[in-house]
Image (cartoon, rainbow, N blue to C red):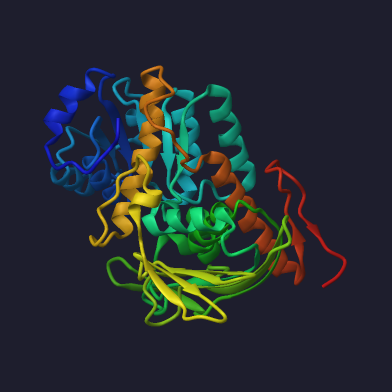
Length: 406
């Protein structure tokens, strides 16, 4: 069954779905920005009902439940995870809670879709990944930039070899929401957000997308990281100054891949005027292929001896069974998240229906989340050592090693 945008009404889709299986019942842990994005995305999917939300804030969970018409609003996430009516847990908590919530969900036999980073350490990420694999639950991590129609089209273009092999990738991910001392967030607290700020938050998105589009794997990194502000402020009953605990508000990363490609990328959450600019360019022997998330419906194809071209996204070439608007209808960030959720829940529905033919899925799993946690640790280690650090491409826990050459 092809999943499409819900134009005909969910009741009709539910009736048709009874031929295959019952509704998938979802519980969302968290009631912030990402939780709201997940709830809105799930409302666009047939066969999925959000039946519970958990947040320690009474006001937030009540408002969230009212806005999204969720029948059960809980103060303790454990009650949601242990609820026998819940089939799938969407973990939209701060990173420091991911491991505890995920392990409890795995223990309860729930399928999991987790926000990134998967965990604040590779040890925790590996423990969750192994537990989920042993339990046999469906898992996913929200690397949603894979799911733009344009990036899916770009992946097909790279795989075709039409423009030759890739020798260099460059770009970055720039934001400005931490520029001022008053710009505060849980990501700046290592006890909640983990040891990395910008790299764990946005660098992981960029490098996951590069590995996904190329099919290649980063084998070594050399990083230089920095912070802009000596203090930050927490506004709660007044302004309270505190030391800025962030390790990386901005930084540059050089990398090499198993296949020999060179990578150069810049990341920042303190670059004025850049709101959410993920941009990436692949240099091949015959062309450069570029995509910018702030112009998400276009691909740029640069040529040496003929005019460069700007291609409009072509959902017919890459959408497959995932939701995609027709050509000429601009897609954006929300649409990519809807497509990711459709892919993940297609796998869940196939499992619950004992069918492998409902919908082929390619969603990022906890293994992909583990990979990016290990990548983040390698970047931090490289910066601390002021040199190159090798990664284990197998994805198992490994001691990071510093190269002798700098």
